[in-house]
Length: 393
Image 1: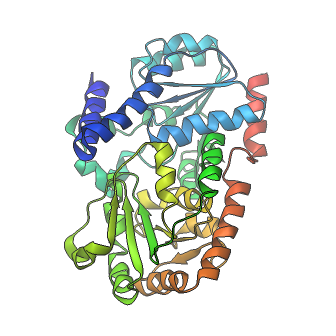
Image 2: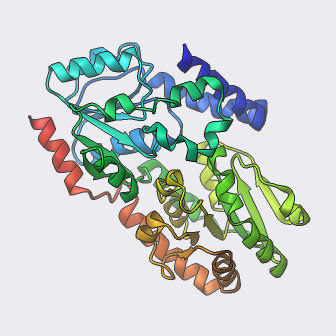
Image 3: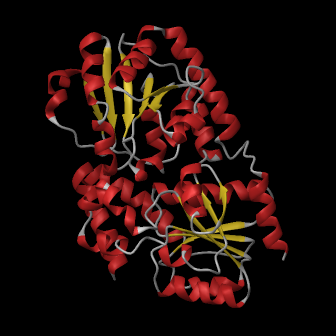
């Protein structure tokens, strides 16, 4: 019942923020995926996620495709599937991504253990550990029902289970946190699916219509990024004052203060759209921004998907200088890293002023994205070998 209340609350918020037409369109897309998740066959690996949103997309649906491309038979489902426990007989490996613990999950785990099958815990953030909720700004904006789900940790019962020996995750920071629990950890980066890559290639083939403006894009994704964006507002004020040909392109749910009001005629707000349409929005910008709060554990746990999501379109990114982006971006070659306001201004400014730099950096970003962040070219021998061992046992 709690899970249903949370989902209804999210649907209501989506419609209120995006309008009945656009919000309904997005909800309908999610509903289609949700219903499909109830029909599961059999195979080697089953991915179980709490929902069908962006997190499930990157941590269940895309990894399932990656493994299929490497010879495994995979399927995805959701924690709400009433037939979940019956699937214990149909798969060898079970990957639980951010699943809210319920009777369905409990029964499946009990049966998988009885059959000595592999259970893997997967996470793309720190929500499994309630001690970090104080760092999660969005927690205070959740409905009471959703807060109830989070207060003990999402998936805490699974990651703290001594039977579970292996975890998969997105970045080195999270891997270290999971190793503190005595787990073997395999990093499985967020990647771009084959469908998304085909879509991006088609969009990239379209010529951009120039109007003389350089568009600086920030794509928030969720309401949890308000504070992240706030960290670069001082730098953006300097940029917009200095460069009259610069426009700010903001997409997704985002609340920000009135410090940017004087530039409202040069700020374009893009409404939330479906995943396929989202890529059209990304292609509209010339410079991509990836700010995060420095020193916030939740932000340290974020993946580099904003870099690869823009890089696939040959769009250069200026990102926060944290561990994840430091490991992903070769500063000054396929992107820029920035920490202080002065550094954000300097590096955004260089990209505004130098078209050749934008182009060359964008090309390098795409090269790296295609090599390391697509399912088509995926390479993770440790992961595939481990799954292969467990499937064979």
